Image 1 (cartoon, helix red, strand yellow):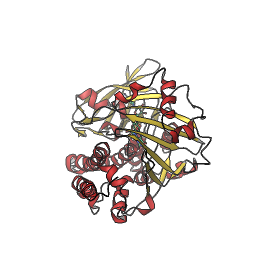
Image 2 (cartoon, protein in one colour):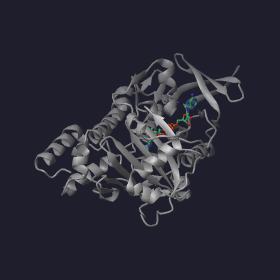
Image 3 (cartoon, helix red, strand yellow):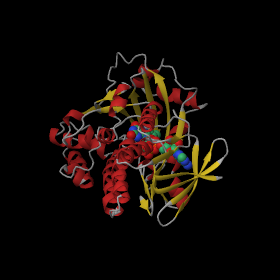
Image 4 (cartoon, helix red, strand yellow):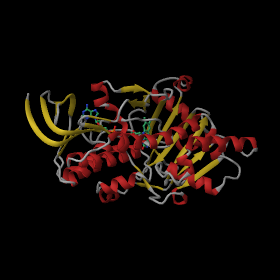
Length: 415
Ligand SMILES: Cc1cc2nc3c(=O)[nH]c(=O)nc-3n(C[C@H](O)[C@H](O)[C@H](O)COP(=O)(O)OP(=O)(O)OC[C@H]3O[C@@H](n4cnc5c(N)ncnc54)[C@H](O)[C@@H]3O)c2cc1C
């Protein structure tokens, strides 16, 4: 074991939060080193982005490289009820001024573009390098990493950004993990060919299909012709399907006429579908002496409104600016300048996630004559503009969602 590196900032994880933070800090003139457990390209779920993340990609100077990959443009989100009712949100009709489009991306490719751009900027990324221990001292930290070949190294850094996603390195090592208030949910998903797409041609939006009160399906078309198709629900929902995971997945598709029609003859692009369970997590604190947590390490709620990568990108953007401020010797109030800001955005999404699973949002989304002004305000939330306090459906999110759902129900205009 030997001390190999001495950097200003060590970034753990080369997902979107790690690479966005790295780029912004590097641009300010500091030395940055990324350590990444996997070899890229690697699979990770989270394929439907929100327009708000474009601001972070722009500040990290990643936009041109991502544009060059010609990923599928995303202009909105369409919610389809199992009885055929439709609610279509177009981001160009949103209330908040800002980006009105984004992308739908196979994350293995997208994350690799961001990571490669970082390396071009002079940020070294050590792949197959896993953080196993961190010791924090007065003005620096010593991080121990294990390489795939079995050797161990240490890295000395003035500051650490933990963007390790589901790895949750610092919360695990420092005992900061807390159980989520959300019930555990499960998903089974796969990338599929989409031979009938021409007939159902709507590749520029995610479709969220309401299977039943607690179960929904994502349909995310990619520009390579394939589509990501995933079922999300209570773990019990999946018990009714038999056989191996491929057979279960095919039975789920066959149980929805719309899906059977479109994907009945489709070919699985992986050997078999994948499954995940109990992904909601939270953390005591988003910062500490010598470190800040970004992206999924802070809190992840639920995939229904595709908020994960956007929260990862925005947290990385904000954290990077504060790390720069700290390295300049200025005082940072991490609680008010970082944690409370990020939590306020997460809380907005929490209201909408809760409203989705308790049925309030069905009443609103599928109401008979939706008010265009309110629809535009909700559209901004779905575009990720959850910090715009001029939007009543951000500022008083919980009250306004509950009140509107109740009003629609009592006036018999709810779905
Ligand atoms: C079922 C499901 C569906 C989802 N759908 C969407 C969606 O449509 N849109 C969306 O925006 N989000 C979605 N998400 C959320 C999305 O997956 C995450 O929010 C997003 O990937 C977070 O990015 P990140 O940069 O924080 O972490 P990640 O993308 O997870 O990157 C973290 C990196 O850290 C590395 N790492 C882990 N441990 C270590 C270690 N010890 N040492 C070094 N490196 C390490 C990992 O290998 C990884 O590459 C979904 C989540 C789930 C569960």
